[in-house]
Image 1 (cartoon, helix red, strand yellow):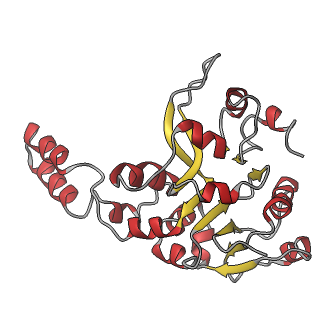
Image 2 (cartoon, rainbow, N blue to C red):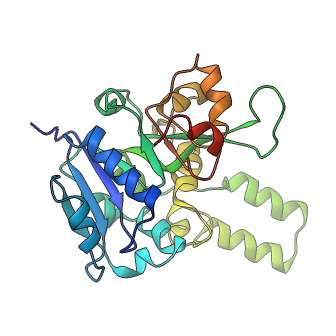
Length: 268
């Protein structure tokens, strides 16, 4: 019997898969196939290869406009769109599983019950110390991420400033000019709020959820670094693995890009 608490969403943007993407797709069905799985794509795509690969598996399809799948900017806009989350209204949670992710075991119900609104792998600075982890920047990568549907809808229906009005006004009064005056007006009206950011192509959707929304709304809960690393890792995977007493996380993202020598001993 399938669990209707959570659905796994797999974004599909191309007809042909690499060997690693194929392995990732097979793995998610092998480990989490008893949960509802939905392929997220557009109507014009040729799904022949997927139909062949998944001929013995159960899944659904949901379609969005093709423009959302033509670039990273389009994808970012999709995942900060009210329409996207409304499509999954009957579920409590959505696990985004891109095909450069990997899931090791089924802990999905456990993480759904962990009382977080957004879960993703921790982010770190680019420095690489010989010992220990780089500076922790926040939560967390969207390629393997668990999202509370109602919390995401609530955040998208609310207004908040990104930079506080006090900071905006102080910037003008410290250096008043015609230019800074209009910057102040723009930032106090249309140019400095979460709704305005929804249309900005330079905003990655996981930055929007993991940093901006988390910072702006105290009720929006994301985990600490250690908890996030138990859920998933992306960079610094081997260091985190050793820190966790050599226990793999629930899943990972970017295993074919980061720490490839480490992941080659655990994947495939």
